[in-house]
Length: 63
Image (cartoon, rainbow, N blue to C red; front, side):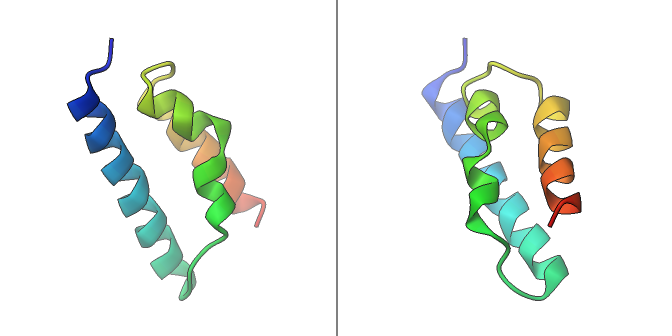
């Protein structure tokens, strides 16, 4: 089970990843990246980090 503190920590990681990715493109990226189902699943402990990361990478490649 994931604690609320861990969920907060994971949300911050998602926000940081979005900012870093956007900086790589020189602008803000599509905010729908944070609406990927895998983001919520990872925050809630339903999937592992590598599954979350793969979904984000796949999304970015399709931009």
